[in-house]
Image (tube, rainbow, N blue to C red; front, side, top):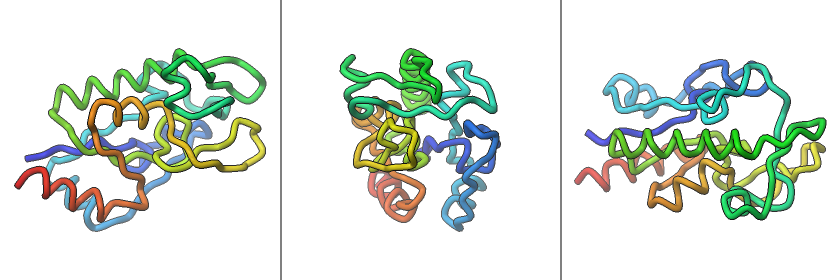
Length: 163
């Protein structure tokens, strides 16, 4: 059975920067849980960041730029947390390798997990096209990354790869 890497916050775990979650109520996700298909991860928490923690955004690019050393991840207030985000992404990748995971469903807009949009680094609530650090690293290693708004597409990919 093909496993799916999924952002812990989407599964109701209170791991977001503000101590909240982004719980997804979807029949497909419920089925994946009952099948034992999901491997849960919060890259920031896995890297040792606290709950709650200051909000963080990528400044000067997106996740690929961070991985290439061309952009940084900053907390609101100015502390650089790039190394934590890269460490969390590496842990997520190791989970994918360990469980032979080829599909991930990650939280949109997150500086780790965003797969289509991230915040622009100004801490003003403006979103911009781009991907987070974890999403970028996983995609570099051939893992298909979907957001919580693309669960049906992720489900199709699961069954296409397991055929």
